[in-house]
Image 1 (cartoon, rainbow, N blue to C red):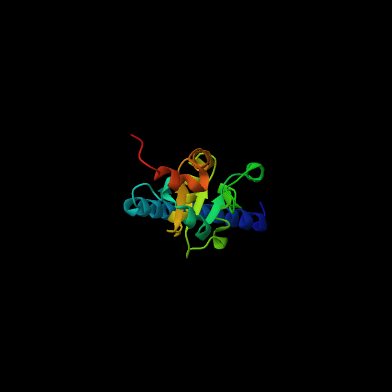
Image 2: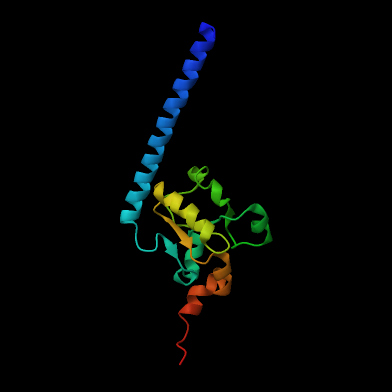
Length: 154
């Protein structure tokens, strides 16, 4: 092995070694951030039910449909913007922190992951729609709150 090859091998090994340390440090930092979040998050972790959102509040929110573009094209909550759940952190600079943000998917499982990531990253204004699009439709969509508060059934 020539001196040049030996030097390159040493540099590569050193870079890989430090890269592993940096990766481990980043994982530890991320874990610490998630742990701190879980210690102080409100019960439910930002989950909200459709019937908790009055009809007049919907226009005040940024609504994110976290499903893929094909699902979004088939139907979505009117006014929603499409942002695949895997992309929310990459596109976080387009998500406001100064107004309510609601994120949903089909059933709430993928949007819960995206919402958790955003909340850990500092978006305290993010709420996850419990049950997703499926429950929103079943409960009456924008009228879910009014239907839930309807006259008592005896």
